[in-house]
Length: 349
Image 1 (cartoon, helix red, strand yellow):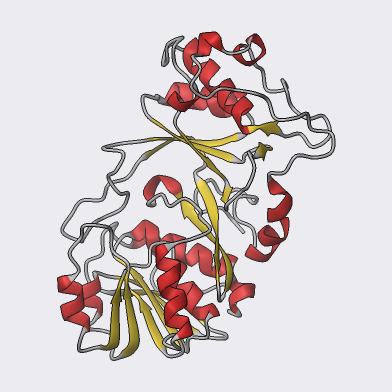
Image 2 (cartoon, helix red, strand yellow; image 1 turned 180 degrees about the vertical axis):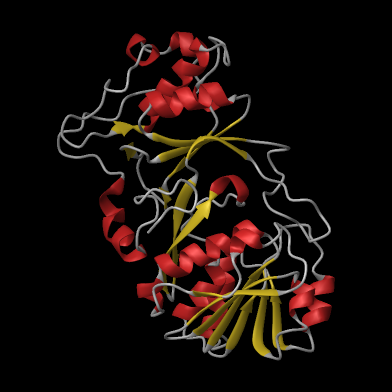
């Protein structure tokens, strides 16, 4: 599949292939040296000298080509200190937020190969970001954080302006493995314009969906009203829904959903490519009138819309279940009011 961000052919792989590789993706091989003893709170000038002057081949396993996460982060910190963006008293935590390219709960510190790490950083410029992606082969992309750390990425409502981060270098497409009682999916995201959710063994919204599954509420027509990358709606396909409507008012979310339908098509029992009804490149970043973007067929009838959630209710005749997964703190009263006559059941998450 073609990467929606960089156009490469290795960023987005079929979900089945990724799930097969997951158990070994970040594991040490038989030739890897033991985990290094590195204090993440130690100042740079107190680190072992071997960690203060790294090149891309240093401390890399000759057999599997991987390095420990802390070694890769120390390499990045050394570049930041060299370029004057961090001081000698900076530590590994001061580099930023590391996100592995395929996220899932790992019971051990990961060993990283090429293009397996995306960094979300404060106080970073484009020139230094490009140095990092060029000199540290583990780093796939560097994202500059904007706004408060707790400010969600995306749009709170169609009346708000979108809040996104800046992709300064490389590619920011990564995936999270979503595990549930109904099955597993590989959910891809363009991370600079998608809300960050760390892969966990327990997820509140997945627990809600599983509860609905056990109550046999997912067998009819399901609307994933604020679908984001499509997680809840696509899990509903796995759960046996007859019809699923995925909708988001933010165009990057709609594009990610289309990617995830294609990447997970085999697992979902859908045609490999959805039928496009509206060219996403011609749509506004924030939805105006409800627009049917794509449909997919197979085990379930799937539709993808770009619309304000309240407006979408005017073009959907009826559904059995409407799932509203809005950002924390956002009032859902307007959405619930719009859907209470259309849906047999409305669930806010």
